[in-house]
Amino acid sequence: MKTKKIMNTYTAILQKTRGGYTAWVEEMPNVISEGKTKSQAEANVRDALELMLETNRMMALKDAIGDIERVPMLVQQ
Image 1 (cartoon, rainbow, N blue to C red):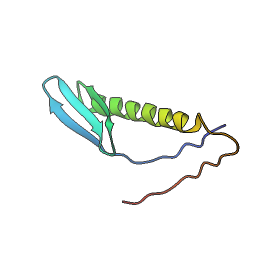
Image 2 (image 1 turned 120 degrees about the vertical axis):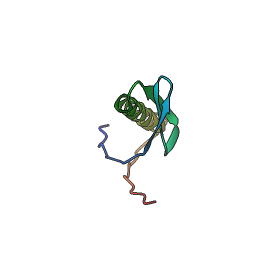
Image 3 (image 1 turned 90 degrees about the vertical axis):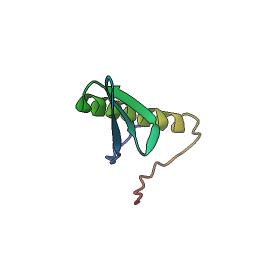
Image 4 (image 1 turned 30 degrees about the vertical axis):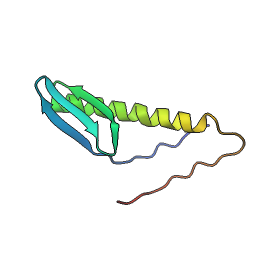
């Protein structure tokens, strides 16, 4: 099954540390990374988020039986 990629906006929180920066995603606090520079920390946490979302999608579909329908949803805050 081919999945259609949907662009979403997430908020990265960057915090200066002794060795560089720690970054996490405000909407998914379990997605955390770090880097020596702000841009490296941001890139690393983006990669971590992409992996988490891909894993979540695979886990959500692995036990599906029969016909399923994936329906994109737009959520406003």
